Length: 251
Image 1 (cartoon, rainbow, N blue to C red):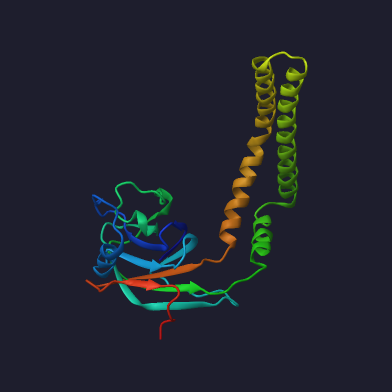
Image 2: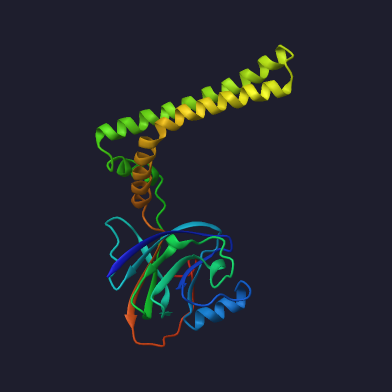
């Protein structure tokens, strides 16, 4: 039993999950060829009807129970998926067996028991205008009150510092032009200003970057998923296929 959370992007309005151990094809698999692979259970295809990013949450051998107040509709029928290598990949379907993946990475892989799986797809239909604010409030709780105050203070300080560096570089160029010192000397002065400012700001970034990483991880986790995939091991082979998010809920 396990859960995996993946931020998937697509430029062909199609995300899915497949066996990462399948051999690469000679050419990207799209259209009818992708549909045929889905029917064979090589990939589960989700037609999103729009390009963009989607938060996928994958439940392996455990049920999905929505949080109170959240509405998820089950889309389409239960479909079969073969994950024979024990390593699954979730993301934009343009990378399915693509010899040159463009939109997925090693972070989009996760391990499962090699098997056939029965898959149900659940779609979050709620649009909450206050969702972003609540996510930031939840992320703030990942830091102590002292850490949060330091994180906000350092972020403001770094932004101000870069503005000062940029202004110093512009001032060096304008001074050079006013004194008719030539473009080379002006560029040298601007470069020295940027280098000096970058060196000073770099000394401040270490602690800020650590806090920023913790905050961003908590922020990503605070957003509810757009799509939930519920996988349960089953004897196979099983018929696979495609689901569409704009289709009717499952009966």
